[in-house]
Structure formats: structure tokens, C-alpha cells
Image (cartoon, rainbow, N blue to C red; front, top):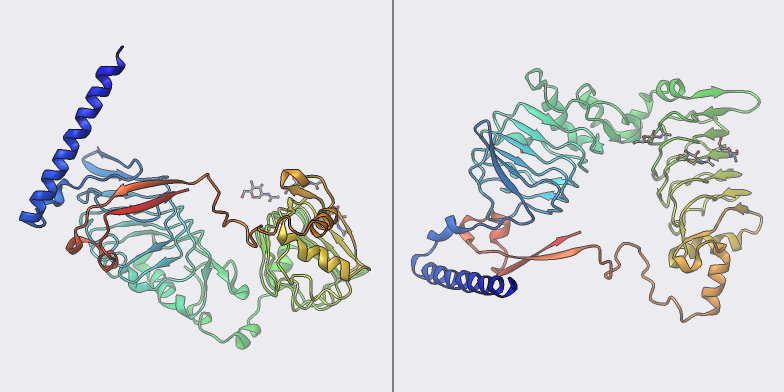
Length: 432
Ligand SMILES: *[C@@H]1O[C@H](CO)[C@@H](O)[C@H](O)[C@H]1NC(C)=O
Ligand SMILES: *[C@@H]1O[C@H](CO)[C@@H](O)[C@H](O)[C@H]1NC(C)=O
Ligand SMILES: *[C@@H]1O[C@H](CO)[C@@H](O)[C@H](O)[C@H]1NC(C)=O
């Protein structure tokens, strides 16, 4: 019984909103850009609130991929942590002139354009930790003369020439709250070194010269080496997140079991030419670069059991001429087109014994030996023809949801990269 009045009310509200909109559009034609104040689109559910006299706009964890139009600009603190932002374009924040703090941690930012922070002349705190930054130039900080607290840790910094200006900037004594704990992820010879204390001269030195400075100490301190009966490096259960750099070149066995290694990078072992056994079992390996095992001509045993592997990149095993045993158990192998390379390779290397190659997905093949799956695939050629080559691009993935938000155009006031775009009435923000 309550339903009818409620519906009526809803209809009235909608009609009213429509007429208001119509009126506004009319006004706009006559009065140009006076209407900006009426823009009130809060994509997702950002919250604006006041605490101790400061205005906060809280847009955390909203699956945002960009800073959206129509947010209130007269705010002191902008919270954008835990979103999906990948790039900060020039002038992204130029309208937030009073901003004192900007929290961008836990996004996926890998690129910051040089004028991204322009206009932020009052900013004192900038949080960029837990992102995907490899290089940024010191120039991005120029628009922020009051910046005092800068967090950059947990980004995969590439310590090469391009990082020179940033490293020197962080090392200026008055910048003591900037960039603490940020470390190099690349190149291997500088892995784990702090940007705060790294000798900037090492950044631009050519690789050949750098070899001379190689520090053998870290790895040999961290792991135990044993020379008899065979040179062995024991790095078991050391909480490692990556293969340690500077492994002595005469080593024949490496035990890296029970660490937290998630990926193998290209040519990770290329200098260890006599390696016979590599134990990477019980790590968190998800990805093995195609060139990860490059140069391991004499490797005989490779233990990859109990990881998170789903398939092998085409070509991963090509250098392993003398491989005899491959341990593959307890990995979530996915039986689709990507797994064929592994079976193909094993077929052409009958001397290789392998264990534990069972499908864990899709459900119809769960528990099957992978080679049985490949056999049915080949028997029934038509089937699976349309399986996409690369996972993760499945357009039918319905976990993502699309939100259509109306965007009012105000070309002169948009950040410049947006201004160049064709005016359009609707923008689609993909929430995943
Ligand atoms: C792996 O890392 C997680 C958190 O990053 C930690 O809880 C766990 O103890 C680590 N495991 C090992 C074997 O170091
Ligand atoms: C690798 O290490 C695990 C855990 O210590 C061990 O069970 C396994 O036998 C080792 N693999 C090889 C090939 O030695
Ligand atoms: C598999 O790895 C996990 C850690 O990644 C470890 O806790 C577990 O004991 C391992 N299982 C076996 C059978 O070694």
C-alpha cells in the first residue's frame, strides 16, 4: 500500500531533476561557464568531511583509475589510497590549490608526468608508497616548495642514470623526511640499496665498470656456503623476496626453498655456469621470465614444486640441455592453450623425468594429468579453438561492473590532457 505514493514521489523527483537539468542547460547556452559551481558528481562514493577545522575528501578504495571532474576543490586533504590509478598526468591536481596532504599510496602508479603536481604550492605531505614507480625525475617536486614529508618506499626503483636527480634530491640534508626506506629493485648489483644512502655516482656508471664494485658479501652473509663435497649455497628459509644478487659463480647447487620469491627475472642465473641443481620449491613463484634460465646448460635438477605457477612462457626451458628431473607438483596449473608449450617441450625431451603436472583449472579437467588434457585437446581439435592465448583478457569476466557517470564539459577549466579530448557527454568509468 505504501508502494504507490513512494513510486509517485520518485517519478516527481525524476521529473523535477530533468526540468532542472533542462533549465541549467538553457542557462548554460546563454551565460557560458557560470554553471561550474553546480557540478556535483561524486563518482563512487567519496566522502567529504571536516575534522579539526580541516576539510577532507575521502575517495579511498573506490576502484578509481583517475582523479575525476567535479570533486570539491577547496579541500585540505585528498585521500586516494587503494585505488587503481596508473598514471598521473600533467596538471591532475592543479585546481586543488589549498591541498596540504595528498595520499596516493597503494595504487598502481608507474608514471608521473613532470607537471602532475603543478599548483600544489601548499602541499607538505605526499604519500606515494606501495606503487609501481621505477623512475621519476626530481622536477616533479618543483611545484611543491613546502613539501616536507614524502613517502616512496615499496616501489620497484630502477637505480640507473634516470634516477640520478631524485637520489641527489633525497640526499639533501634538509630533505630528511623524504624518501626514507625506498630501495633499488634494479639493477641486480644495486638491489636492496637505499636511495637515501646510495652513492649517486654508481647510478650512471657503465655496467662493465660496475662489475668491479660487486659486493659479494651480502649474499654470502645471508646464505651459507659450503665448498665440500660440492660448492653449495644454502638460502633456505631466509624470507627472501627475490633471488639474491651476486651468487658466487662456482656454485653447483642452490637451495632457495621456503622463501617468498614471486618471480624470476631474465638471466637471473646466467653467470653460474656450472649450476647442477636449483631448488625453488615452496616459494610464491607466479611468473618466470622467458630468459630466467638462460645459460643453465648443465642444470640437471630443477625443483619448482609448491609454487603458484599456472603455465610456462613459451621458451622458458630452451637452454636446459642436460635437464633430467623437473619437479612441478603443487602448482595451480591451468589446462588451457598456454600449457601446451610445456607438454610439447617434455615430449621432445624424453630423457626428462617430471612429477606433479596436474590440472587444477578449469573444473572439468581438475586432477587430470596435463598430458591427458593435451591429448583430448588434440583428439578433439575443434574444441578450445577460441581459448584466448593470454589469460586475463577475457571479456566475459563479469566481476567488473560499469558505472556510467555523466560528465559535464567545461573545456577551459579541465586539466589540459582532458581538454584535448573530443567533448563527450558521457564517460564510462570501469570499476573492477
Ligand atoms: C611471506 O611473506 C608474507 C607476507 O609478505 C609473510 O607473512 C610470510 O611469513 C612470508 N613467508 C616466508 C616463508 O617468509
Ligand atoms: C628442495 O627442497 C625441498 C625442501 O627442503 C626438498 O624437500 C626437496 O627434496 C628439494 N629438492 C631437490 C631436488 O633436492
Ligand atoms: C608449501 O609452501 C608453503 C609456503 O609457501 C609451506 O608453508 C608448506 O609447508 C609447503 N608445503 C610443502 C609440502 O612443503
